[in-house]
Amino acid sequence: MKIAIASDHGGYSLKQELIPYLEGKGHTVLDCGTDSEASVDYIDYAEKGCAQYLAGNADFVILCCGTGVGISIAANKIRGIRCGLCPSVQIAELVKQHNNANAIALGGRTTPPELAKEIVDAYMAAEFMGGRHQLRVDKITSLENRQYSK
Figure 1 (spheres, rainbow, N blue to C red):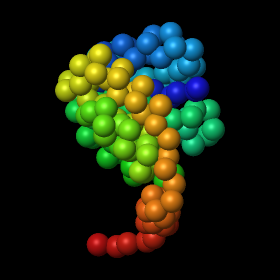
Figure 2 (cartoon, rainbow, N blue to C red):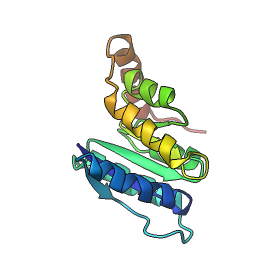
Figure 3 (cartoon, rainbow, N blue to C red):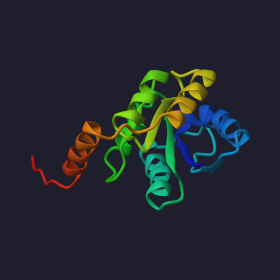
Figure 4 (tube, rainbow, N blue to C red):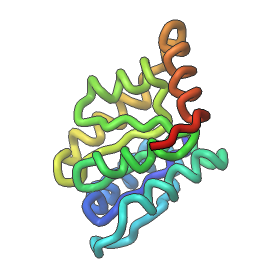
């Protein structure tokens, strides 16, 4: 499997733990930065990671920031991305099964590395259930195409 992974400074150390773990399981990992704990904007790295998925270079995206919240919000602003914040194994399974998420977000300051590995494994093992969930994913997609003004 090809996996794009990106983080800001708050998720950098977790990203660095996940890369060799995933490569050790035979996956190809595209590291989309950042490359240190120097302060950067999570928005830029959400875009870099998701761009790899949208270009067809990755099967899904792992995004890490301090809490996972900011980077998931940024990712969900990108047309075609459905990113779920995954603080637990159960949520990781459900975002794939029910939402067909193509990106997951983890908190580098809130998720211990061993739990993060379990979360990623659970997401990758889960399968989209389709059916009524496909109807909901279709509705989400239609929201991306609507124009709203404030």
